[in-house]
Image: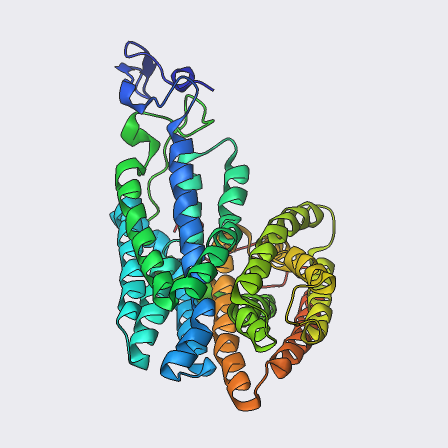
Length: 457
């Protein structure tokens, strides 16, 4: 679609409610990026680069566990605690990041977040004390990456797209998987060839390199360029930024927490985070190393999880439109639990077909739980579902944070991760039960489809 197809001429006019004719604001020629390219696609491309980088940087500590242990004598539990802080802040920052973007703008918030991530990685280059690890990879990287997750992609798609909004949302959501795919094998090779500091330097430099791209190419709203959102009709009115997003997030949490459904969803999704990001995402590489597998091979397997994650998530969305979300979640968690119970016997010095089959199967299930969980939030909480899902997602990250630390302690105390894998399999069974316990909301339920806080609050 041509940019000019959407833009009226400077001489066109419209009639206001009082009956007087007023001229339309002319669209500026600088908004055109070529004969067929709407600037929304430039903004989406910048967002994709940011999200891919954020996901890859966030995953780096799993590569540093063994090198830090050998150089400083730091335990797996200590490094796992840094990852735990990272994941916790990543989740808790999400409900409030959108409010910051509405207040200060996308460009300054994302630029500062990238700079904070670069600082966090940079701190670790010269560290020799555990608190510096917790500050760098834990607090700073977690806070920075949390400001560029769901809130960022949701803000971009809602402002810049009307047509193809779902497609762009799906692509940006899949960017987390792509981040692992792009960065983990490369960073693993750097660690193997040049030491762990090379990975920290690479992350810091790459994060800073993206800042000028954001400053030069990112724009807040289509109206800044004299454009309509992509696919918007000519009479499209740009909505005002919602007021009080931060207070609304807390009010919705207070209301939703009175519902049994909220706690079942949050509990099951916390187990989802525990058995993905917290355990496999953080400890798969060092666990494979315990059995003699090179870091580069283990990192490539973890990156392959990201490939099948994209396929599984898209297919899960298709199934969610056709099947009962409760039963889908129950099946997903049971299958994930079964695969984790088998994993300890699959580790070996080399990659073999059985491990590849596990990676394919597990990858398909990695975040397949997201579409049915979102659907159940919508079913129970109506127009407040996006806010509720933000808090459910925080539960996901809390579960990931707890297990990231606990699994490291298990490895330190027992000398292997076996108990962590078996415990995760058992937790998946609990999540399946929680999912199947969710019933359909009824008229007597206090929050079902009748949010106490209006969507415009």
